Image (cartoon, rainbow, N blue to C red; front, side):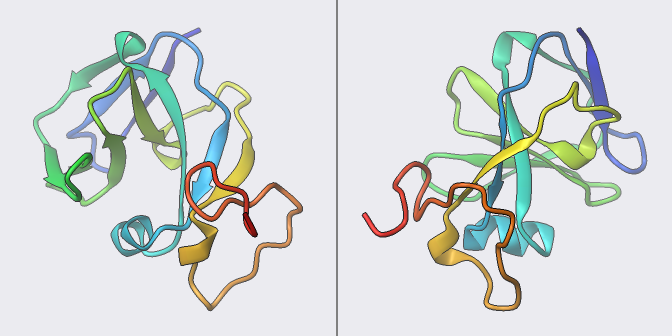
Amino acid sequence: MTLTGGCLCGAVRFEIKGHLSDAHACHCSLCRRQSGHYAVASDAARADFVLTEDRGLAWYRSSDFAKRGFCRECGSVLFWDDGGEAVSINLGSLEETGGVTVTKHIFVDEKGDYYELTDGLPQFAGYDQPLGS
């Protein structure tokens, strides 16, 4: 399976030659500030991820352990990368997701006060710490 995606203007394009992980909705303050709401992303193995156009790609180091990829021309938010074995891909940047669905909400302890989560999916205070733990 090959999935394709990119930014709004086409200055960043990529392919994923493999499967994506289950998706998560991240409600951390950094994702909310960068995207304007919360971010929905899935991980692709680094070996399966290929940039086919990168003239607009820029990276912002948002923390000591990760950077965020975006298009410097149109502003599209695309990637989150901690240097590990996978690259996190914002699902809105894909033409098709290969059937990936959101399976959990993370960093719910930082979510905005202007919306509620009512879909019944598991909610975590951090990345993998259940709420109330």
